[in-house]
Length: 211
Ligand SMILES: Cc1ncc(COP(=O)(O)O)c(C=O)c1O
Image 1 (cartoon, rainbow, N blue to C red):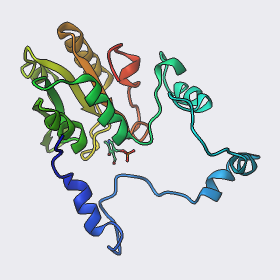
Image 2 (cartoon, rainbow, N blue to C red):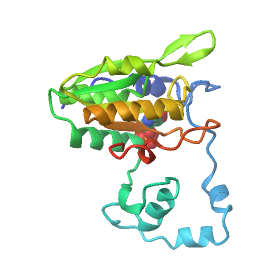
Image 3 (cartoon, helix red, strand yellow):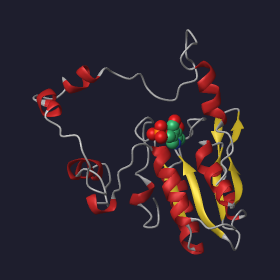
């Protein structure tokens, strides 16, 4: 598999650790480990007792349970842990897609989502966000026009990186019903979930074939 350059990472590689002020980050300010461990009584002692070694294949059961609490309709059996979202994108796309399949991606979006698909040999169509004087917007009706006989996945990124645009519950329902009609999977990148006010529930809570 030949994956094209990840343009964002190339940019970061050049500037991230030497620019005096970083205005391009998408993550929030991080905290030292000691500060994190001070948030809960006994956390530091428990952390220092952690045993290094192999973990369970699906991930640590306690963490699976805690993650499941952020969903309404999914319990810990529906969760898989990864070392980061990048790894989850890579594994999901490689598990589900075959050469010749078609993916529709909200655009702009995080490059891995569509670049991995291209590297597998899939066709990619952009479902484009549009910038207006009132901010970004996207037309749910136009999504239907992008569906082809070989479409397998609709990939969403909401809250969106890089625009910050957040799909509403109404839009999510319209996407879910389109996906249902055509038997499509929805891959919903919710890395920034929780950053916007009045966000709808996770897509996995409203559509059973969403990941
Ligand atoms: C929308 C989006 N998805 C996925 C990722 C990758 O996340 P991770 O660094 O956890 O692999 C990022 C990282 O910035 C992102 O912005």
